[in-house]
Length: 310
Image 1 (cartoon, helix red, strand yellow):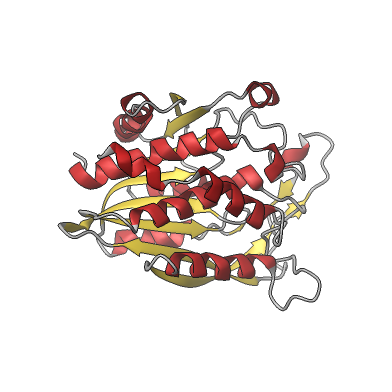
Image 2 (cartoon, helix red, strand yellow):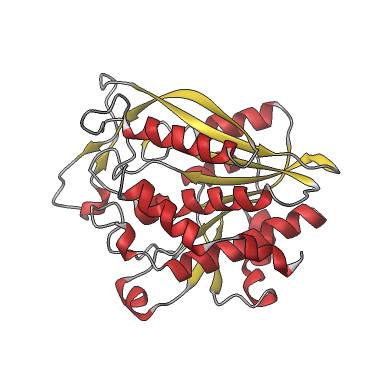
């Protein structure tokens, strides 16, 4: 990869976008919240904005309709407040929602696909801005679309913006569709809660990212992504971690048989004190850490595009 490609990633652009989607005008990105005098729920409005931003880059994007329910707030004093989400009941209302999928085709090996994932919704059981979880991943993948659209590509990059704070997770639909189509997916990168760290690390300005894998087959990919910081002189402490079983949107792809799948996050176990809480606001985000994490992920995507994977 040409190191100059990294200059296409803009810290200021991501900060602007993150305030836009988690402070004003959206605040909450959920099917059960509609701003006063607005005709659409905030999640639909976000989808429209994402489509506009992606189309402005000249990139093909589609909305794939689906149906979701909201989680319940359990108000359970026996568990931490951030885990007060309960499974929807069968008789709970269903809402229209959508996956947003952008595709940047490659010119030499278009059949080989690199997936970038991020859930775009905030919590459906509380009014939570979800700046880090997962506004951070949403603006990161949007910024990488903008950058990739300006560069030649050998392989196809497909970007999925799904919903994970509602039920069911329709990232599974996308994964099953790729499986049914026989898509040659060489890597799946789930960008979720990057720059999310403990209050102590946040105050100290620590910049770190954890490359988490579940299937043993993905360990080498996780290590490859972690190596980008040193290779390109990015100030970022990258480490590896494992998850015992598939979950989150990366789990949807692992269950569909795409084992070369990783999750990129700030910490594991997750240490952000405002996780799933109203305090997950854009003012708390370390934008240098967010920026440096995206530089490392983008470098990995560019190298995967240029050289492929075993």
